[in-house]
Amino acid sequence: MHRFFQIAVAGVLLLAMLLTAGCSLPGTNLSAGVIPESTEGKDLTMGEAADSVFSLNINRRYSFNPLIATNHFNQLVCSLVYENIVEVDNDFNVIPCIASEWEYNDNATTWILTIDNTRTFHDGSPVTARDVRYSIDRAVSSDRFLGRFSTYQGAAQDGDDKLYITLGVGDTQFIKLLNIPVIKYGSYDEKFPLGSGPYDYVFEETPEELDEEGNVVTEATQTLISLAAYEGYRSYKTLPVETVYLKEYTQAEEVINAFEDSYIDVVINDPSSYTNLGYASTNEIHTYATTNMHFVGFNQETRIGAMSGFRFAMQYAFDRAYLEELLNGNAVASAIPMYPTCAEFPSDLNSALAYNLDRCKIILENNGIRDYDEDGFMEVMNGNDEDLIVNIILCSDSSAKAGVVNRFADDMLKIGVKVNVQELTWKDYYNALTDYEDLTKEEKEDEDFVETEFDMYYAEVKLRNNFDITQLLQERSERNKGSCINYSHSMGNGFETYLYNYLASGDSSRKNNYRTFAEYVLTNIAHMVIIGFEKQQIISHRQAIRGMDANMGNPLYNFPNWTIQFKEEDTKK
Image (cartoon, rainbow, N blue to C red; front, side):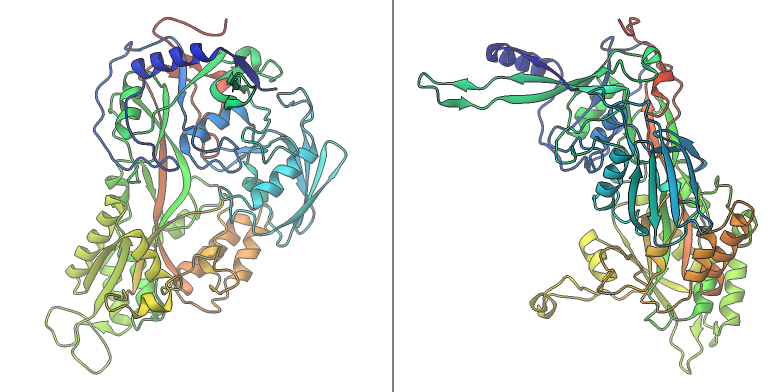
């Protein structure tokens, strides 16, 4: 169970004054982990450490419930307090965890998970199938995992160790979706649900203060201060530290300075985002795969976007390797909507769709787009001399995205196609993609309202771990607009048969069926152009930590086998 410390109010005040003076810098709080500025890091040589303890950063304004926590600092802490049903490595292979075994029926619509009841929550009770079912049911509707379980229809437990899961669509890859945390049954509404991970929350409690008449002057408070090693954890004896101390820094400069001065020891960084923090290159940076995919979509209601030949030609128009360069290696180029290290990745198709401006030009000309009037610019064969101008929009949140699109515009000009690039604020970008469906009639009739027209859009999306891209392909409607992110206005593109064949495939046919599906989407209907996938970073001080094996669902995976070298050796007492 959670641990508590009670201290006198005067002691709390003194401690707060000391912590404020010694660690924290003044600044404003930020929303949900957003740190909107980027600064340069400062060099740190090995051996410079401010203390002999292991510390992580947190933000107490946001949730520590692992099923809804969206703050990245808090998610990192949660990965030490909770265990996932399964783990998924950087090649998207599944590693048993709370679910020790699994099997499915002939059409993969029913799954049976075997739950490891030797694992216990921090109150000593065993983890059961009931807890796992409860956690999945809550994750289905949580913001953090929203859209992941679109085919999940329900689950039922059989005793403590068997969980039966029913799917609406057969999916032999469903187990990859279950790298989600497990909490104890009935604890979802608690701020700190019970977990079964290697560490438990430790709180500092201040009792309520009463006046002479017994009225409450100050309410009792409970403050999370650290994590304590859980003795019931199966690898307790190998945990690198007894206590994980928790610090709170919210401004970008605070976080960077605290890390570089070793007041916090590990941070997660997204180098592709405007929240990218400028940590010094002398730190140790480990990257791990993500399903964050960059792609280009088409507005198929415009004249040029409706031309499948034009869309197919664009497969060869984007220098995907340039994304890797812009992100300093923190991305991997891919023409396929699957991470390249996956066993099912069709390398031959990926190579066939590689960047090639000459091929792009030939395909355009074969589809009636050529320089008819010999002025150096292409026109669409439509009986007039109007030069083709392609309008592409993107959100102005990333210099890397802008770099890829501007390189595309420069390359198109080399073969005679004019491209108009429009960088929009998130609000304007979203409104353009959704046909301004969220605007009122009055807002649309405002004299300052200007509708943005576009043929193509550059976007980023977090895919499911099984690389089911239904949300990018299904026709958008009033019924599904909350989950569907297909803004192409395409109708009836016939992808379902190919996708469902892949999802239901056994080991022997899965790779071939995925290739057939990918080829249909990328060449037959030419629905989108895939650019690549992001990597994210877990950063530690140079030579301070050995044994890191981060993955997308658990950046602190394998923590019991870490070796942490402090300024003065200080492991478990």
